[in-house]
Length: 294
Image (cartoon, rainbow, N blue to C red; front, side, top):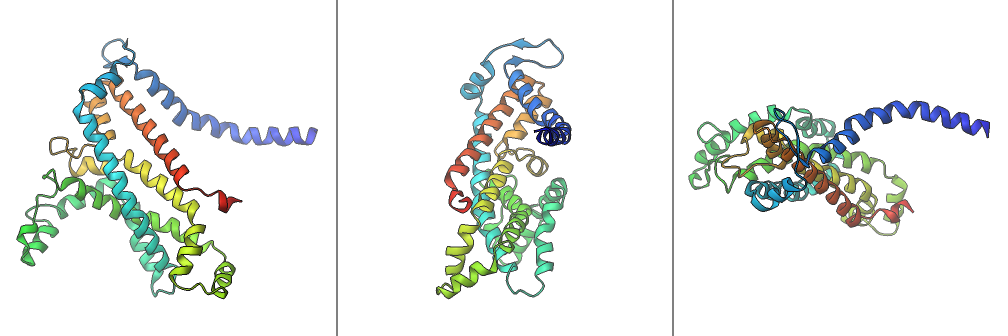
């Protein structure tokens, strides 16, 4: 009994500092945001309790809010559709017998380690209508009709941003898949081959089912990252043209720090939190790993 108490005391001794730190940077700000969302506050004047007025105004009078919701959901869906399958197929290729695969792993993962500000500035030049590589390449190929003001036209701006997001983070998705594939025992594949499974049958019946946990993790990371995306969009478009590419976090920053509506900004933060929780819950329900855990 004394030994168990000493062991519990040792565990508590090491966990408590981390728990306090985690609470300070996660739980306390969440509680503060929920609390402040019920107030009208511009920092310069005393806080005024207004109940649910911020939420009522958000859902009844704020058209930009609905644009941001549409944009983050578009970014979420397109990122999942692009990053998950392409990251998986790249992982399959680079865990095979490919010459120079370590070099290609480095090439694909490198953008994920670059600053989003630097990436945004680089792709702003690439998309530039006069000096950008894309329009100049289309011009050289004689495809002038396909040239666009990629970051200035409402019909192309979100697609252009999504392409950059996927380019930057597909390598991160790939690396997680590679780590999971390499963790699968070769004995499992040998047993499947003895049963006649080869090629894509191995991938479909062995690799993919065993990768369910990491598929879930990747899906959650991609989804939450899409919902709270800000810096790259801010650098490339500033939310324009006319808020067409505005994200929820970008709008939160604008209302909080640009217009000093901290109560309204915190209500937007609460909506973001709720969306992240809902998306995580849905993905956990859709991708079950109970059969693997059992």
